[in-house]
Structures are given as structure tokens and as C-alpha cells.
Length: 120
Ligand SMILES: C/C=C/C(=O)SCCNC(=O)CCNC(=O)[C@H](O)C(C)(C)COP(=O)(O)OP(=O)(O)OC[C@H]1O[C@@H](n2cnc3c(N)ncnc32)[C@H](O)[C@@H]1OP(=O)(O)O
Image (cartoon, rainbow, N blue to C red; front, top):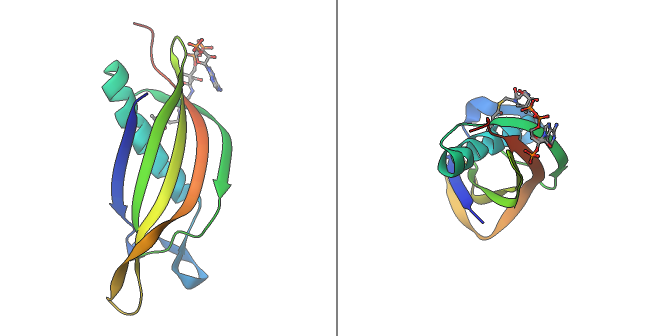
């Protein structure tokens, strides 16, 4: 099964809540981009997101985080592709412009969703 990984820096312009927290929808936007690449690689089309079965916000995403976003296709239907998603924080700001690579990535967001590609 195909896995696609994106890496993304979270700009401070996206901080939305106290403590520089980013809104949960930010992770869903990142999942959409990963799903788009999966659809292009599998089907030569950007595809359309049909639904999420489950979304879990397990730990905060903060401005200044470096994220790793993965999507793995777990089921191929005729036109539907079910995908498991995960956002992991791999680097985080400490103070001022100082930042560190985390020894153990933090799993921040997980989801399962379905994309649909057009008929061939
Ligand atoms: C990659 C990221 C992109 C985006 O984020 S795009 C922005 C958000 N998404 C949208 O705007 C999409 C809006 N929705 C639609 O346009 C349509 O709505 C769909 C194209 C998603 C589906 O419509 P239709 O093609 O007419 O569906 P069907 O012919 O009834 O089913 C085709 C396959 O898709 C599965 N499916 C349909 N709806 C859902 C659903 N809501 N959740 C899970 N699966 C769905 C079915 O089962 C079947 O699957 P099987 O081909 O494998 O047999």
C-alpha cells in the first residue's frame, strides 16, 4: 500500500489560540494535501475528499513546529481510497528562535478518511 509523507513548518501567522496553538482544522488541510499527492500517484487525478470516519486531536500543534504528515492507503475500492493519516511534531521551538529536534516525535493528530477519484 502506498504511503506519502510531507514535511511542513507551521508559520507563526497560523497561531490561533493561547500558547501559540494552531487550530485543529490546520491538520485537516495538511491531510488534504497528502491525499492529493496519493491520488495523483495512484490515479493521475487530484481526487475529491468524501468523508472522515474519525479525527483525533491527541496533542497540540504549535506555531514554530516542524511537522511530518503521513497518509497510507489502507483500502482500495473501485473509485474510493481509504487513507490513515498522522501528523507528528518532529521539531519544536524552545525559546526565542531556539528550537530542537525532538528525540521522540509527538503524535499530534490522527484521522481516517476516504477520497474518491473520477471514473476512468
Ligand atoms: C484530495 C483532497 C481533495 C479535497 O479536499 S476536495 C474538497 C472537499 N471535497 C469535496 O468538495 C467533494 C464534494 N463531494 C463530491 O463531489 C462527491 O460527493 C464525491 C465525488 C466525493 C462522491 O460522489 P460520487 O462520485 O457521485 O459518489 P458515488 O458514485 O456514490 O460513489 C463512488 C465511490 O465513493 C464512495 N463514497 C461516496 N461518498 C462517500 C462518502 N461520503 N464517504 C465514503 N465513501 C464515499 C462510494 O462508496 C464509492 O466507492 P467505490 O467506488 O469504492 O465503490
